[in-house]
Length: 140
Image (cartoon, rainbow, N blue to C red; front, side):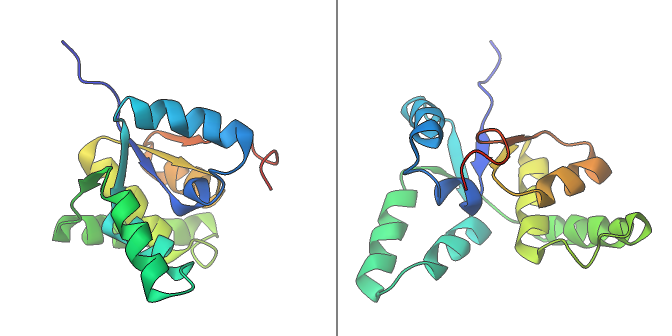
């Protein structure tokens, strides 16, 4: 039997969970146990904490999701994609955390679920699966 597809959910999607259309999508994935995070997503989520207590709450909540490890080869892949993006003319527009998150998802065969055009650019190089959590422009 085939394993269900896991989604590595980027901060851009997590941050919009309060929007009804986003919640509809993420709630279903969460109920099915198909949401994953990685260390870089955790770090990005912590940036929004306004206190140490809130940071602990964020960490407690994301611990309910699968954690995809970020081994050294993920960092090598992120650098490789960044170098390839030079020829495409967008290497300075890609956020470094997004490169690491995408490389982590690629390493684990997960789909990046996001609300960030960086992942479209990254997948144009890697060919990996990425999806907008909702249609672009509908959750701003």
